[in-house]
Length: 268
DNA sequence: ATGCCTGGTAACACCAGA
View (cartoon, helix red, strand yellow):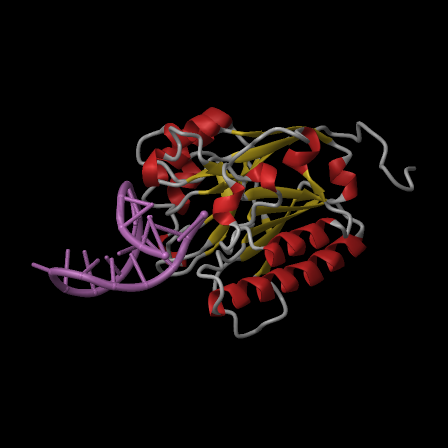
């Protein structure tokens, strides 16, 4: 089973790119972020014609998340992250698919630092951590995939010293990510590529893609039983080089049907 | 220290992204 996350940066503006990639990569499940479209303008028919069932949580102009499933209808389990009823930004959607809980998230950017946007980012991260801990306690297979807007370590930034005071790399945000992992989640890309420089985003500015001046922002967090099934984790970097493409590249994992290795702790 | 580029919304420019 192949599961992908992709910040499309406008689902209608990039629809041709999205459909081309769906056809070539043929993922079973896709988490999309930055739809930049209200619910009524989600391109459900085109996505259905491509063979995917979908659920979405849109918003005018900004944000927006969706989950697609090939030949399947995602069963909606949640729209919006708990913990703040006044939060109107569409940044979280969740579905049950094939016995798994799939959480699709778009964590706030947080720039400029310092300021209210950075505070909102940290608060959102805290709400995510509280909810993620609840999901782990359910003891069902869970994947939290999406654009986390954080480079977890210096290995995830082309030039770390330039990003020290940026909201994507501030120590508070890296610490929040580290603490989240500490609950028992596995960062899929890093688990299979422990020392490789892997990026999922390249700025439109300054020929960033041509220079490979990238950032690793899109992550898969796997609950222990999903981590035991992880066989591959990659980035479709070539898609970033297409015309009218997103500034993020699709990132994906492949899971085996059954566990392929023991759990690190308390393995059965 | 800043803009670079891009889409969305609106409208002869701004915001937000990262």
